[in-house]
Length: 278
Image 1: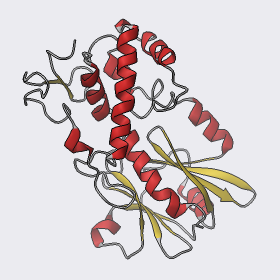
Image 2: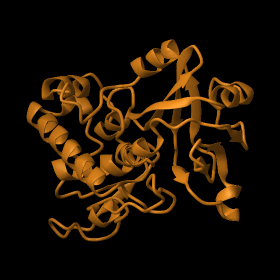
Image 3: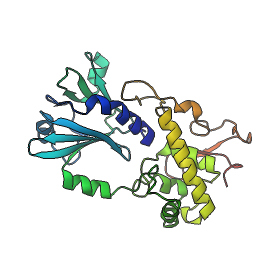
């Protein structure tokens, strides 16, 4: 967490509030979230930068910045406990305690990246750096350019368990543990089945449900179990619609079989129905 729906929700909330605004200054409380950029370089670049775009790529929020004589991208992956929120009031002591990056804006509000366990990452990339970073990521599951044939080809290229392939950001981006569990259940596919053994019908069905579930999660503003918050500080609602994730040991809502769980596929909890998923 957050996965594609959560980051997409954050980006949609931030975009109308951030685009056109100028960052007056910036403060960073911890450097362990930085990747490929020093604290000094990051804070120097942010001071006076104008926000010209806010988008999402995979599980990253991408803030396009206009700097003197150049452009750059502030790329933030929130990780399990991160959130991006614009505050129009003073932070509470708890909010300030975990505010890793603080960036006051020219309208008096403040962009805050909060990360309790500091599991997220912050990058500052120029055009060349962004092109290389973007090229290493797989296609977007909601992009029409990811045709059923292309998706089937990606799955056929690996002998790993289908759940691992679905979560591999080099192959398909944005799908994490929650939505992989849900999509495989909806498609009736055993999460441990080798990806290369899926039929054309299987892969088409899986892509259909991946897209349906991700779209439904975006409409519900993501899934909140503990830390995730939208770009306005609210909780998501898709946890109310989950059919398998977090329900290990409970009855399957389709057939009544007790849902099983394992950590053997990818060291993360996988919840599935022996009867519905083959």
